[in-house]
Length: 528
Image 1 (cartoon, rainbow, N blue to C red):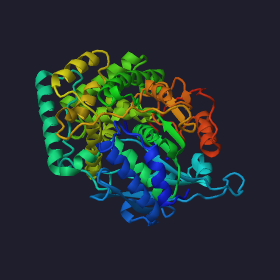
Image 2 (cartoon, helix red, strand yellow; image 1 turned 180 degrees about the vertical axis):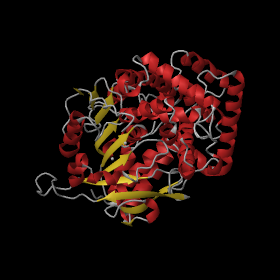
Image 3 (spheres, rainbow, N blue to C red; image 1 turned 135 degrees about the horizontal axis):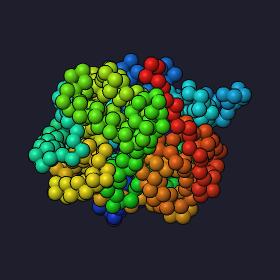
Image 4 (cartoon, rainbow, N blue to C red; image 1 turned 120 degrees about the vertical axis):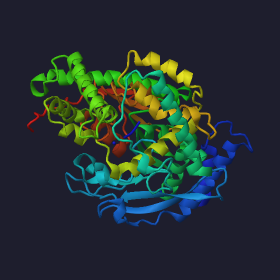
């Protein structure tokens, strides 16, 4: 899950929020009822105080056209007068000018983005305003990004010493031994304990529901009576929760590469589905490389390309490239080819060069960067805190072993790597929530837009179908026979036409529409 978003008086906000907020078992005096009231209180305060935007700090690495500020939100929404955390927010103001004609364009408010994660910052979103495909949207909207709670400078969460986060060259067996499984389980349990020790009382409050509540407070602070939102990947789940909790606060909402929001899929079963989909997308990469055997020499069939990859893995297991890149680092680099097909030429070139005696491209792509360790550790900490807190997980490793041993027989590429990523959730010390039943009644929401690629592996296509079913009035735009993760503003002009028409004019293409796939990437020769 990674990855490429109106002014009101405080009194009227307090009147509209309790009626709009629907939480599980929202009986008087229950925790969920308290959180609904706390969200209303926090949003009313934010509407009154706003955000004091100003120049961004040098550390934030944003260009002069972007301004920054902070937003205060309750750590625990059941106690809105208790401890608060501050979220960093970025904004580029609407240009007000059509990029093609130079004519004045009326402002439509703020377009808030969540790029995914959990654990990913959206602070860079306003930079897209200078990209040609986004200039029409940037003319009408203030582009607003933010770092969710725990991420970056937003009360950052840490679960282990960043200096020890990167372990250097490591193995990545597709079918690990019993001893390897015991070692990884022990490591996952130790991580969960350390996370609880380092984060203390804040840990249980890193949840998707709180991320959705934070989004409503941000909406109010921006002076918007209704939210215009672009969520990608995990950001679609935040949007789906928001639409369920605050349907009357939705203006326009785009779900780009949708997570399956069915409560029984959050999050363990979604992980199994992702592992299966990774195998299909890995096959797509191998088939593409085989079509370009004349360029890369990896094999003229998908199977032969897979054999070439296995040769690289085996050699790296014996001798890490440059002393830095072992099988685990190779696999991490190749995962980007599963997410984004524009990475295919670089990844194929690295494999080709290595087999011809030049390890430099592979080392460059697979090497872990020590200077990025703190950011990577923070991202993993937030990822696990949110997912582990959100829902029940199997607490017996035998269940994980059974399910994933079976799955790895037909989907070996990513199965066990996904297990090691999520396994701390088996030992998580914080209380688990019951996932919200995402849905909306007929006519409760304005039209919303779902974008999905049929062969997306990170958020498999059935998630878009499920979200479409749960949100009446939603429109689903499908990129056929394609699998890049995150479509908004990407390579498919057809998809972008639907996106722009919706955000600028509120138009949706009926219930469903489809687009032909964007062109496959052109191969680049090793010499290039």
